[in-house]
Length: 170
Image 1 (spheres, rainbow, N blue to C red):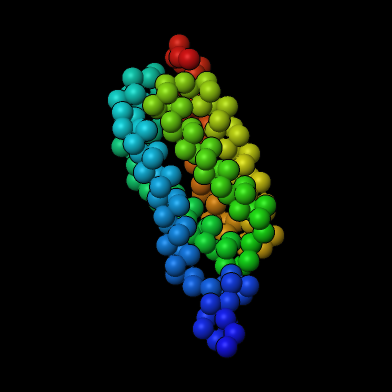
Image 2: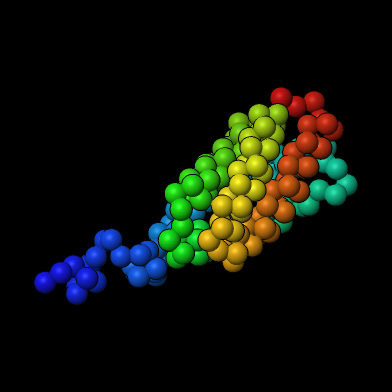
């Protein structure tokens, strides 16, 4: 008997492997990033509200629901790309972006270093742009799913810069 008759052919294209298990893997991966980020940002509302904020800054209560939706979309985008037998470059950019995301939360809130966090989020912006371009080669849907995430990151980048400009912060 060959492995294919048992559904265990590890050389089968990814879209033929168990897609629901892989969706759970993507939710798990992004969920770990979200959980660690949430732990790093336990004092985020207090820290955020201590800053002099620009008039266009959102209330701190908006961040948690927005990030929840964005993390769900991130998981679905990664899974959608995976379903197309995505290339390693796309997955590498996706993973690097998740790490930059986690680092920004830790630097900005837990580390209290808005300037270093600003460098990180600019790198994250660039990484997400690269990820979108790489995902687009295989799946327009996966790429387009990342556009709201990029829009929020660019807004957050502008907010990070404004906080640095309006406050005497490290």
